[in-house]
Length: 65
Image 1 (cartoon, rainbow, N blue to C red):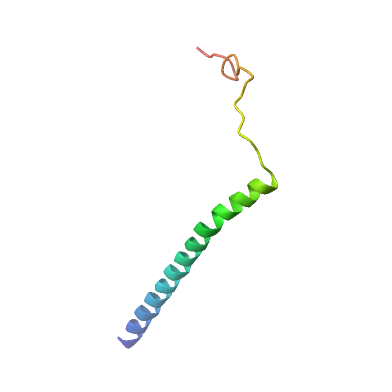
Image 2 (image 1 turned 90 degrees about the vertical axis):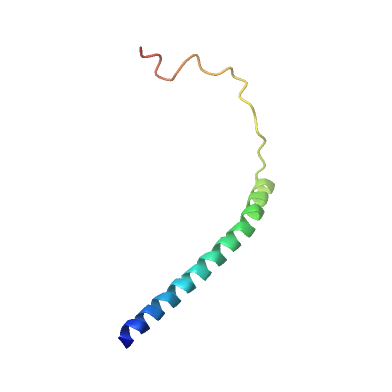
């Protein structure tokens, strides 16, 4: 009976530690993502361009009735 209680407590502690670790990872990721995007734009800026070529006449394989 004592061993089961110890195992249960050990498992609960491990789950709690993994939740804390996961939460910390998500917080760091949410903080760093905008910074990385901004730095990427500074290094290699790209403008959004609309396609002015007029597009294709139809689907790539043609029409299959």
